Length: 135
Image (cartoon, rainbow, N blue to C red; front, side, top):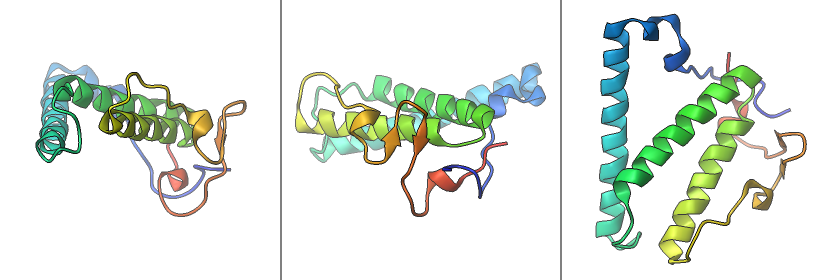
């Protein structure tokens, strides 16, 4: 089964430490910094012509941050990385659709090789996220 061995991923927002005002403030700053780094990267892709000028890089950066954090949280609960894989794959598909200038986002995980949406498993092999063990 995918996602049963390897590195552990942690979702810091659900830990007891995140419940104190200081920890929340630190997490807020960390997420803001991460979001800004993603936004800068997306803006650079727009500047290079890899994404269209009309791309909303701020909202797209926020969406990626939310997708990864949500994927980490659910992967932690399920003790496999299928959800995180799905979030990242869908976001990559979205960026490809955006780069191609196609209206709307219709790419779904069913279009990804090796994903079984009925039981939430991935049969993809090789190194990467599918080997992470979330505890």
